[in-house]
Length: 390
Image 1 (cartoon, rainbow, N blue to C red):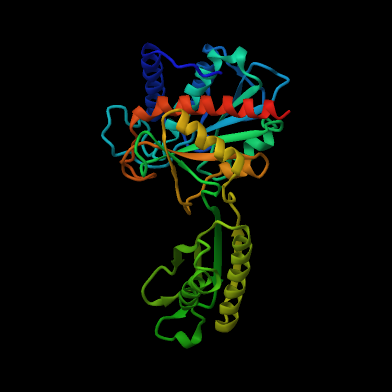
Image 2 (image 1 turned 90 degrees about the vertical axis):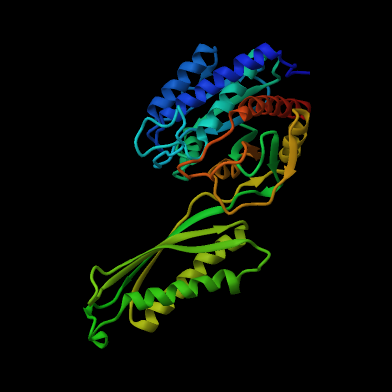
């Protein structure tokens, strides 16, 4: 059996190393597709540990691997490495040194965890019954970084994939996931309305796009409240309305944009069709020219039952308190991998904090090493399972 217990000395050394890594990343955040220094830093760490880096066409981010049996099965573990355009307000001694940029979603934590798992896997490389690909993915916050990695070909032969997200809703020592949809499909819409501008004192001479936009916003809310089942979680939110530039002129144009979140494929397909029909009806009824644009993002994560069961068993084996958590309407581009590769995505408790994307968000660093040990063992168990079924 692999993953032997480690001594306290080794745990302390690993914890100090990974905390140092996490703090370095936290101080030097880079936005989506700009993670040049982060990638170089990770390459240096991996090569120093004797871990091979694959030659794949990624401008930022990387894929490494640890392999005991090159003819055996292949699994992958993934971390995302990009930061957010947020001005940090934590007051930490190691807070961001880059104005207006911050690891406000904990991707520095994810990266340290998976690097630690890579270190642990390297120590038992010769006994591995297959290969573990170690993925440090760029641009998760863009919602399309996973597509970039898939296009590189670096995961073409992977048979199972596992990922993580930190959460302040769980305490350190708790791990949660569920079978099926864990996070929502994240789609975006834009609506342009063009009427006829006129003096505000003579509205009869124009066609008011603001009135049309107001009707449209209200009608869009009926899609979820009246056209989808209350048991099927979905959300339509208009998050921007732009029109006009002064107080006494009815403008010519208005612009709306927002987000749609869904858990089921059927509802995801239905909502944009309904939105388009409502938009066109409002335009026709009020004499406004409308343009509806649908900009699809990542689908819902869909945790495979087999691999989710394994994720739960390994959580209990490594001392976690396992919690079956409800789905969320937040998004995660890990879902793109699951359209090609079965796997499971889990939430790691990092202690109470301000929520993700808040300028005072932080994590409890005591969660790093247990999570590294968890992903190391999860990868080994997945390889053993696949090997026994070959």
